[in-house]
Amino acid sequence: MAKLKKTNTKDRTSSRDKFNEYKNMLLPLVLESAEVLKHFKLKSQKKVAKAGRFMKSNKDEIGEGLADVLYWVLMVSHDLGIDLKKSFDAKMEKNSGKFPIESKGK
Image 1 (cartoon, rainbow, N blue to C red):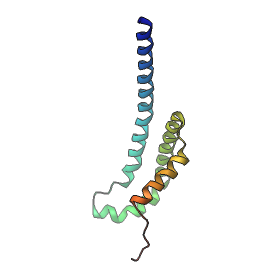
Image 2 (image 1 turned 135 degrees about the vertical axis):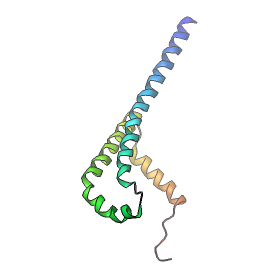
Image 3 (image 1 turned 135 degrees about the horizontal axis):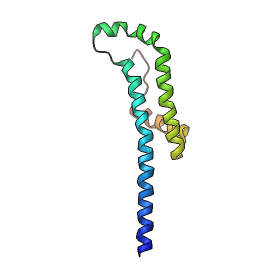
Image 4 (image 1 turned 30 degrees about the horizontal axis):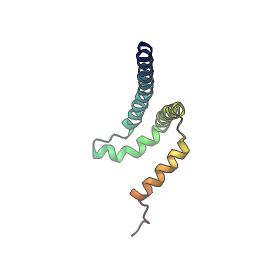
């Protein structure tokens, strides 16, 4: 019985460590996403008018932020054994029912 408890405790510890590992990998994903978001925060009508110029002048920086987000998505999906293409295709199929594409002008 003592051996069984020790094994179960070890398994739970291992599971908790794995959970924390994924949590620690997801935190930078969220932070990098927030870094990208900061480029799109528009607080006034004046800033909205200037947004196009701002986006063009900060395109490289926004691209770097998106690359950081992609890095963490790829890391987590690899470690979890998730086929991103399969998941993406399934999600787009699911979304097509929720958000059907309608032709413009109707």
